[in-house]
Length: 321
Image (cartoon, rainbow, N blue to C red; front, side):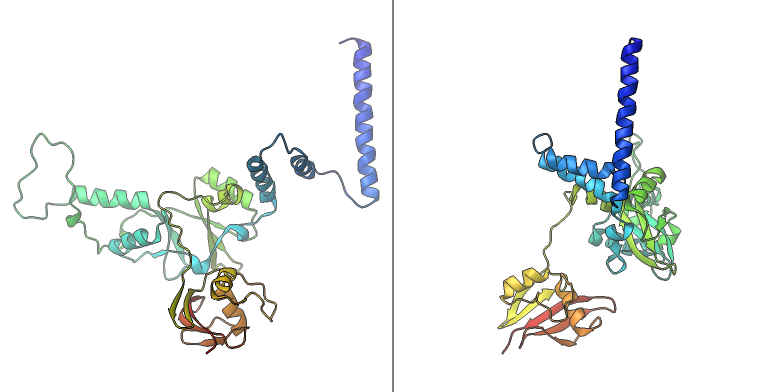
């Protein structure tokens, strides 16, 4: 490059920098603040209709939105955590893995506020297989395996499923994070520590919720379902004339549509999305089994048929007689 070209290039660069500085000062004077690269990218995504597919645009927007999301936005609440006690037997743990459909379960001592770690289904199965391979034959005097068979013999009948989980030595550590932690920071920490499960701890040291790496990734790419996931819609069924059995987690709009009455117009103005949330809002507390709550529509009643101290399970919805 010649001196003249270089001088022109340097002058042009100084001019551009001066222009950018002037724009930033003007934005500051009128209270707009400096130019944000994030805002520029978002505006570019809106304008790039032909260059970026709708799916790509959604993913990129979700990545940018992750900057403002917290662990609180991704976590599973305490009431929905499936966990196993450290004094549970191997048989109870196996049944819980089978029914829960999760690959990882948090392990606790006395309560969920006393977490001891987590157990992975792969480690659990490996431990059971090891017990089966090294167990003595169940039948006394059983002949030894043929000499040509080098593979270890496994006998599930020889496993003592009454042994407590704490004796299995298969627990792994979990992360403990506050609900206010940025979700992106937790994702980076999970990648660095090779830990896919974190317990969300409140200001008093109690367990507030649970979040997995999959929960955070789903905030970017949407729901991830594998071949074992079963999409079970909350049950809404008629069990009698004018009587309906409804899962409390059923969407309020679905309940209103199926029953033909609009329960979404709550006079209290509470923002609720499920039938259980509406019932708790109307009652002013978590109603217990057998309690009857008057619906916001005259003549309709909610009868609680399943509940625990933290949430409502199932509700009988009675139409006007």
